[in-house]
Length: 280
Image 1 (cartoon, one colour):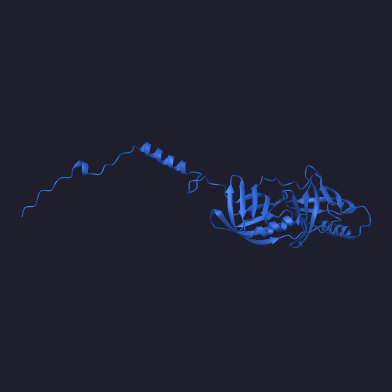
Image 2 (tube, rainbow, N blue to C red; image 1 turned 180 degrees about the vertical axis):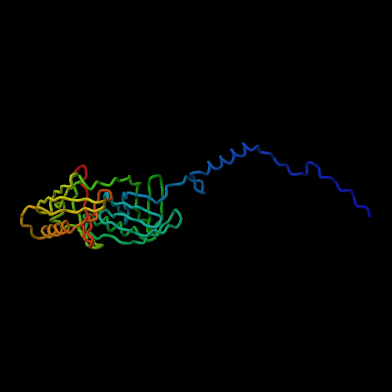
């Protein structure tokens, strides 16, 4: 049996491939890469990552806006947050669900009685549970399920105040993991300065004092205190006795964070103090 002749494939039946010169192909790839750079999958510009330092500007809750004190801030890490409600410091665990949601579990916090407790209480109540994230250039807004918000802006870098030459005002007394603010009668009165030559001068809340200090790395040791002899009773006298014992207890671990100084003894007792601002 003779097979029928097979028809050859005609040129128009063959697929046509267009040759793209190598330089042109490379340019096309680069153009596509640049077009996608800085943009999210939906084509919008990629916004700042929530991880970083943020200054809290205000809270909106219950139809009201509460403006934040200048010390309220959040330092957000990949899975942990450190911050300040405006007076009390705190930590929390952060579990991100992509770039648009985070679940916050509160951790430890100080328990000082502060001037603006309304803001502190509202901030602590809002900054927990599941929060949605609304990001914009240099801005971050966290929103609760009921629509309350925490509005923040990028925090400027803060330079740590120097241990010496700074006038420190004692704000709280620390015992173990608890910090207690000074009583009203003593607030703002207990101050001290360590001069460049390590001469110490200040006020214990009632009596003025002077001493010499020795600084070794992150520790500072105060020598014997010389003070005036006024009789100080009540809360002011108690603060004075506590500070006198602390300064005379031996080497204290010194830690500065921005304008805040913490001095801690080996037994966990200590103080926190704030650096005077230029206006002060």
